[in-house]
Image (cartoon, rainbow, N blue to C red):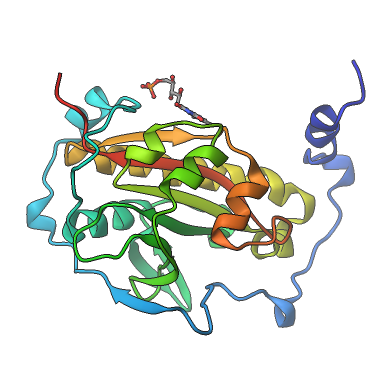
Length: 247
Ligand SMILES: Cc1cc2nc3c(=O)[nH]c(=O)nc-3n(C[C@H](O)[C@H](O)[C@H](O)COP(=O)(O)O)c2cc1C
């Protein structure tokens, strides 16, 4: 078998009882758990999620879930539903010390994944690129404007993004996980992102919106749209949300 990067990655990030060694955590140099922008253009609070409004059966949601790519271009997402979708992916549901447990699991409860939104049509939100703050449950506006065309182009011209009401973009702040797990962190960040995306699929299906995972994109084009360096923080995954078009 050729010694390519994929095979080497699998091999060199394996846990092996012969090579485990002892590991102690450098607690003084633990990276920040939360990302905050110094001067966002605006900060928008999200409405509290009312559990009484969201009562879909888990069985029905699992049964119905599909990747949906055909959306009504003019539909508008309410802030309540956007808040529910964000909560489904990364809502805080518990606390232990300064660790905020979430709706999605995370290796070592280190939560390396950050969420950005490309907002196209959401009630009372200007179109733009936003960063979601898990701890405050709010959105920081990073860049105003309709980036749907540019993001669709960056995703190999997948037109569902241009018709989405919002597209989720997930990055990893790698050091948050590498601090504990070293090179094995590169496995865990993708697993974390997969859990989060599945929660978005289920949340969207529960309120009859269409969701589609997006793994095909030009990495550095997306990194540049949201303003991350592609090394210490890099885009892993995206998902579009739209109103399914009636046939
Ligand atoms: C890691 C991953 C990446 C994906 N990337 C894309 C993508 O870039 N574009 C797309 O249209 N669908 C993408 N999908 C959705 C798959 O095509 C879809 O899950 C698959 O066809 C099964 O269909 P279902 O989700 O409706 O059950 C992706 C799914 C996963 C899990």
